[in-house]
Length: 464
Image 1 (cartoon, rainbow, N blue to C red):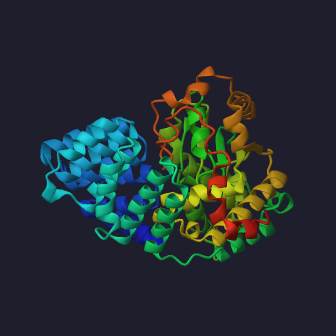
Image 2 (tube, rainbow, N blue to C red):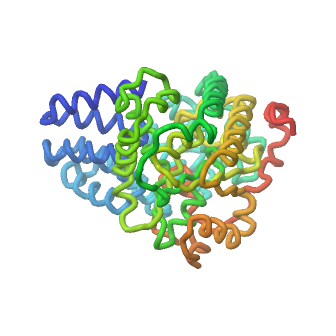
């Protein structure tokens, strides 16, 4: 019930803006919805009311880290260390900064400073994650086993099992990797369904074709500086953003909450009683302008002086119709990946721990992939300007040619630094941060063949 929590937190902040607690609650609610920019602002407001609060500093450090700003997060952590020196939580956060920056040895050393009596389930997960990246198999197994065999919450145990899966794949034990991922999903005990994805897609196609949208209000100002990257989780969207972000013209927005915030504000602003997406019909030109201002307010701190800013929110595939009205001329890229490679990556990664319940069941996951892919086809036919259709396999096999296609689509000049995207100082704001900090590799192409014996339900759904 995150939307209700956020609504109540916002109302409390408006009623009692001088109470630090309301800003803390609002920051937590925003962080849960991955609106890290909003969370940062809320925690900063609270910190001004309660200077040197360890609680606010800790949450602010987490939000800035999740927003990809390692430098700012480190500064906040240094301030926190002066208030609560030597805390286990401090070491965990410091290790996470080192891990995001690929300083693995420093991450391990930082974690080892925590006394044994203060080593929580989260500590063991963090250490196991670092050791897996360092290929220190035996100590990694020892750290993860503490959690996977009973310590911590179900979510933490599942996360530990997903790290087991990652470790087994690195050891080329693919059956072991699949077994570990299966245990992770069993631990979460989810019962996913594709029904709501199918209903949303059906309603989108019914109401968002070009002819219907032509009769609806739209904003007066163009928004061709905004680039929407539309794809499934684990389809290469983080890689594409990292390639683009090394140029001097494109800002990396990551999985922004800007479109979701705009969508939530739409029925309130229009005073519509219609459900989403029918409420778009009640939008007036002034409302569309106001909604564009809301969206731009969310990206203002990211865009800075860049001429383009990317947004790769996973909800975009259902929001493109609305965004084409409030962001006239918005550019978009349809990024796709071989369905079985995409499915293997989603099923063996800890997406299920982050709310993507559909990844826990192969048949449901395949159905969601197909539904989203059909929506991408729909937008290719119905969006103006026409999106760029881009395939992950082509991007990794011929990076320069495909990157030039993308830059031409964005009307920005070629930059040879795109070929060395792994040297970027920017940190991806998603779970792919450790992969996009490496040179381009092709081992993820046809990865599904290593798991083919386990993929029967997905192959049946997709008719492959």
